Image (cartoon, rainbow, N blue to C red; front, top):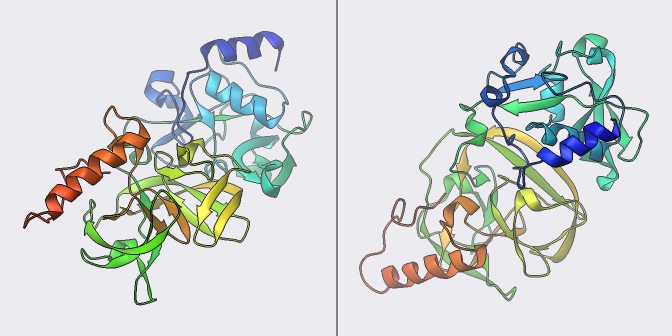
Length: 323
């Protein structure tokens, strides 16, 4: 990528971009012709308007190139679904950077821009500038993966006081599950509300994997505490960050993306819940209104205390605007 192109990308880079959804929609970018293959909710492009062919570049500049034009790097599954096939620059047979990390974050997966090349995917050194090009994806306005209302995947498991495990999608109000307070003390706390009904809502999930093999699926806007006590969204985490687990502090060694159906969470009287062995908030950032992440807990916990004080214990869906 030329110095001029990189400077333009920096100039137009939005201040905050969701890890999974593009800053601009396919409609806004006029990438509608780049949606001939793959999902009806995703479009792909290599060059359109002021967006010129990227040339070969490293992973960081590939990400910057796509985000600077309002899009995002495609996931491996999107590239393998031919989302960018035939989008120009002769890149159908070139290796293309994906957003899926590998080799403990030292590399990213690359694969040809179209399945017609029959080329195998590789884990490529993120700093290598002479191997891969950038093709970009974006999301249509109708994309369910970018819609509000997201949390954990329904297959995420919690630990019951009996010692058994249970999927989030199967929980009942009153089930006592493993939780944690803000000081890292674990206890079993009853589920007081289940914000999501049984659903097959499609969403894009981040799979967070720790050094001991624990992994949990959550949406990028879901809140999670880091080992320094900061509250972050999952989308802000990077490989090497430290998170709390049922066995203590652990380092994230991989973050990948996938699209699945079924979003769930559970709210207890305690601050955090433990899902698939990893400590996380019950809430996503879309639950916070105009509050900071730390403030949202106090607001909702106070409302829970008031409800628990009498005979008003009920499903709080809508009342607390939980997602």
